[in-house]
Amino acid sequence: MASPRRIGAEDSKTRAILLDAAERLMLEEGYAAVTSRRVAAKAGLKPQLVHYYFRTMDELFLAVYRRRASLRLGHYERALASDQPLRSLWEISTDPRGTAFTMEFAALANHRKAIRAEIAQHAERFRQMQLDATASVLKRAGISPEACPPIAVVLAMTGVSQVLVLEKALGITSGHEETRALVERYLRELEGPARTKPS
Amino acid sequence: MASPRRIGAEDSKTRAILLDAAERLMLEEGYAAVTSRRVAAKAGLKPQLVHYYFRTMDELFLAVYRRRASLRLGHYERALASDQPLRSLWEISTDPRGTAFTMEFAALANHRKAIRAEIAQHAERFRQMQLDATASVLKRAGISPEACPPIAVVLAMTGVSQVLVLEKALGITSGHEETRALVERYLRELEGPARTKPS
DNA sequence: GTCTATACTTCGATAGAC
DNA sequence: GTCTATCGAAGTATAGAC
Image: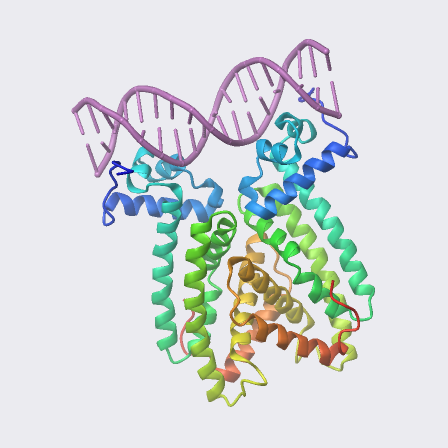
């Protein structure tokens, strides 16, 4: 009884265009630039259409996030099914676009409860997937979980890749090459040399 | 000849109060919450005073950043002068407040050129300080730079600490304890057990 | 140094016609 | 599904009195 207001269909073409525009805006100028007016302008549509497809701006942010998370889930599944899961995971996590999203949504989550909850939920799931793959690679390599806990490896990979991408975006690159080389050495020890071209 | 507009003194008490308010607002609700009206409300002052002390909101952000960076520089210097520089650096970089700032400003830098430049400049300086300390600790421990480049250790410490703090803020903590334990083990190997209470 | 008053812009959101 | 029209709130910033 609260809301007689109409909302557009989820499979609408226009809705997808608005999501694309919001996504690009977020990457290029940060979440603060994602306003109904600016999204519409970027999409070549009227601002009111944003409100027709999304009840609130939070709903728009959530829709953007969910679409990305769903894509990412696919990437993860393919990575884990490959013959070099750790290397594939490293390539995904050092992709600038993916990490830019992570950062932007993390900042956004600081003051939007609904988004924080959504992120936390997905993050735990991705973490578990990474952990399973990492644990089995380390086991196969004969590295004891006591000497080197797989979960710590996962966190280290996550942290190092995020720093590399974040700093590069800020124009800081000192030490990056050496760090990438070191990671490459570990990957070779565990899974051998790269067998597929990095995309 | 451009601006006949008056600007308040840098050593003003009121100015400091406004900076405090902006800083807290940024930590609690993210940079988007830092508006002239909200900063003034938090400081118990009129919004116009914000514009009296800062020409633009960017100038306010820069002032907040510089004040923090200056404090941080002092922390670093004390850490590097201590008898356990690596452990001290780890404690600094896992401090939630410091890292929350880093994240918030990194996100802000995405669409504010002046701030990006300021951050990059300071970051390189901090990086160099960390590197010097790390290199000398590793050397003393007899670890060759070829086996383990000091710069990679610095980036790893930075990345891992950031992930720990960022995820904790989002409510994600799986694997954190194990990772902290692993870092502790490395710190003990290099510098021995903690000799000072973590603040 | 702080106030009132104000100009102008942009924001999220809704109602109702087509 | 998209449009015109419009609200009230909040944003940055400035001028000028006290």
